[in-house]
Image (cartoon, rainbow, N blue to C red; front, side, top):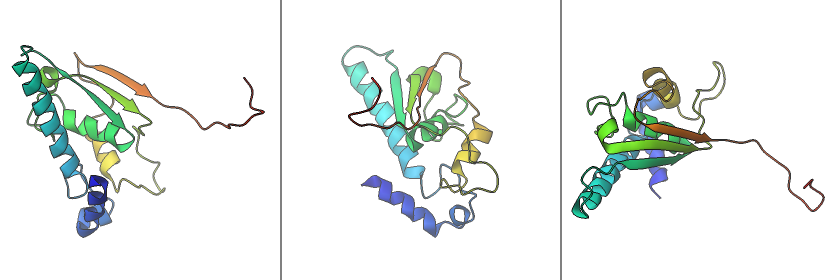
Length: 147
């Protein structure tokens, strides 16, 4: 699958050093695909007569914080997916997404990318967009579990 492309980050010195950015070798492809998908959905809606349609982004795990990078600060220049957030997107739903980078001194499986996203695009800050985050904790299942 495309997620194997993240391993390409091993060829990137910044990725290996834990200072990667979302548009680098490991995740840049994801942002390109996000931009392509948004543009395609908008074109499809426009062809069906809804020229003002906006897209709802849905991201699971890393897809949630990468969607934040795709939105940027709302302008195409800051968007790593080259979209205009307020014109192209109506909201972002994240499922099981770690929005904060790991504490200093702990392993960062994002190799610095989440720290970059959190510093550059903190929180859900774009006016006119709706944000929903779904998160949870582990639970035990079994026939004796409380009901």
